[in-house]
Image (cartoon, rainbow, N blue to C red; front, side):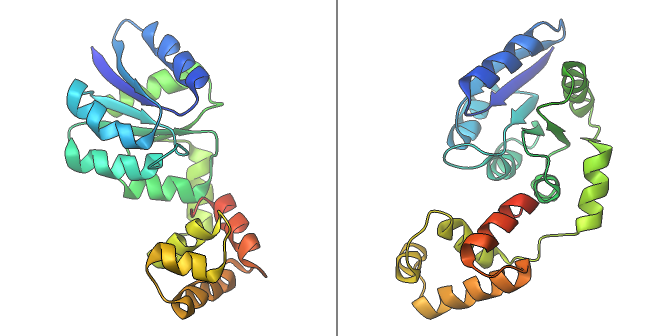
Length: 201
């Protein structure tokens, strides 16, 4: 029996995935959570074989939760399941230790097959997305530039960002300027949008 943990902030989607996987004789959904912050604690409690994680969730995103889970329970294999098949998400998921990356509009049998294959230790990635990821290359943003853009996504002045990040105003301006240049954008709002579209945030 393959023990699966599901993490998705949308209760309807989570329930549908649980119901679909529950129809399989060799798969049992042993836990469901609605935020990235709950993943490791739930996994420690139920010891799943496979964790199926959404990317965009409240608290920690699924990619951060995947990395944390890899440290906390190295034997638990991770599949990232997302609405957004962005190349940047794929490369970040692989860097976080995920073995699988599937999009939610994939046929149900493809997701079930991914759970079985990842449980067996195989890597499962949509070939079209893999090709796009190779073509687009790695994120040009540094960790700090990504952090500043993430904080800028919610708005606020440079001083607001600086206070939240415990940096000086000048340092925040430099990181924003660099991120704007690297994304080929004209404003920080456009830089945030472009970085999101590429899956770099």
